[in-house]
Image (tube, rainbow, N blue to C red; front, side, top):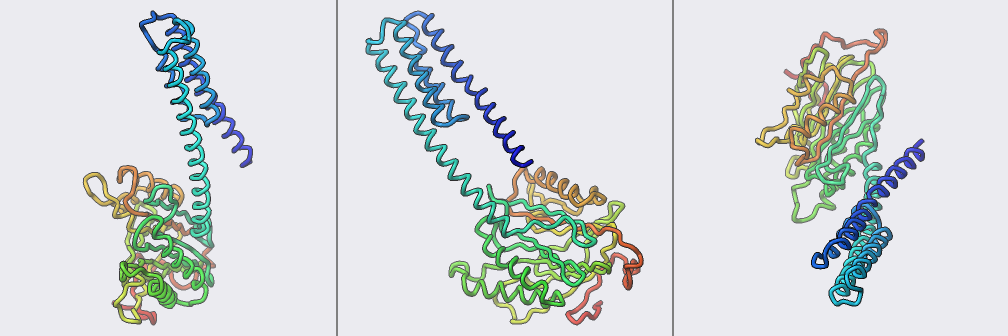
Length: 396
């Protein structure tokens, strides 16, 4: 089916190019007829150069050369109709048109070669970006998932923002983060954090231990590879969320990252309580930083929206930040894919069509489960988040 669709697209493009080819040919014919019929004092022949000049916009160098040759031939016909080809004025016009046509053909050839190189580079870049940022599955356990990435840098699909999800011991662990910088230069740090998460998420029983491992990875990387002129400026914010399959109590820990939004039926949007620790890789901190574990109730029918600060820091023409919590309230009952579609359209409209920073969002919708599967925590916990220390003791 893919090859069939590709063939249809190529056929439409070919037909479009043929239709556009009529424009320079018609232009040559009209200029030639009018010049031949006009008095000898009127010279329209120099306007023939417009035809080969237009052709590279929709055709390659061969077609451009053919149009240039046709225009030169038309100039010869005009010369023969107005006193012969031997006059100095006509000779100059014919030579000039031929030279300009050759110049346009050379430009078209260079342009075509440049486009082929750009297409190859873009293909390699897209493949590399796809390998780095694995697409999230549409369904993991009781969760329906949708993700959105808006890169600030043109032609890039990813940049300094990142996300990943994996299944660990009857729970789903999700990472969303933001390394310092934006666009393609920040991909190195994003790759490091993603690799460390994918390698370590299955090895640690608690989020606190997992965060410690990520901190060590980022710190080791910056110590070995950080340029001297950027010493102390490489760091990353991160939010780790652990969603059990059969328990409505969800755990999260933040390293300088914005809190998620919890969307409930009835256009209710709440912000779970969050007590973030410093970002990963910040120098000058104690060797062991305490990471607070926050918990909240994530019930069937709810949607958890994770995002990076590129979303909430997007500004409109008057410098106002994007009011994410206010806007998503109207779409709280939409499925994840539709929710992110609405946010994308609204966010770009707010920012005037382009963002100043990378932006990433993940929508996690908890589908209903059978009652016999659910034991322990229930709706009695309400929407209030509970703060715990590393030992799991509830704090006031």
